[in-house]
Length: 239
Image (cartoon, rainbow, N blue to C red; front, side):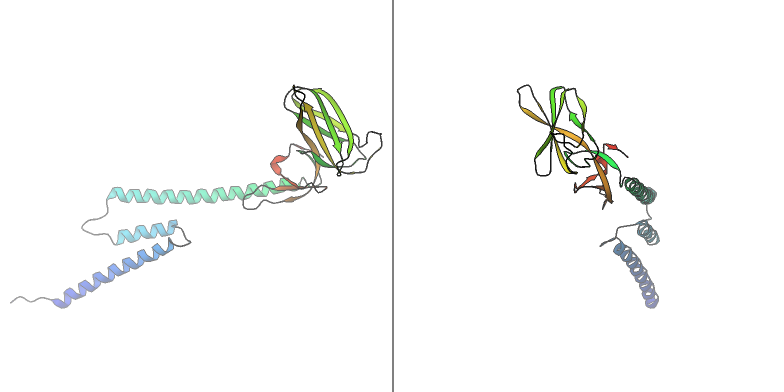
């Protein structure tokens, strides 16, 4: 008469179910780390790999090629994390260096492309007209904050490049005007006799520096209510 050990079979089944449940819980815990606001990091990846090895089918173990591929993925993940840390460190050092460089400009004069600047008429102002091609005549009209014409500077014929000019702070009558914000409008004429507006480069004084936010470029705040410019817009740094 055959006797079946039902108790023993039940115990084995319970043990098997327990192992399966443990494996499921382990995988579930790791899966939670890779969902929501979290990303699958190297620790979670390694836990998944170990859990997979511990609970693989003994009769059909994982293929060697697949295992090597997973290890390669883990190595790539580790390398990417290290690279990210290095790039973040470089970015932080660059921002600090840029902030130090920009702070040294406070109180100094810089040359930027603009048509308006704060002028101290007790001394001469030197600016430049950006000429794109050879022209027959270039004039610079200086106007005050109310739009009144103060001075017309005739530069004559100019070749392509920068045409420097000097304003001594005086009007057409030879009188020194008040210090303040002045606009410099440079023009020439084309072959048809039509007026062509040219850009000017003028000095401005840096009063403060605003650090860039979220990777943005630093801003240099200028004297005389001229607003701010990007650090990259500076053409020349003066004294």
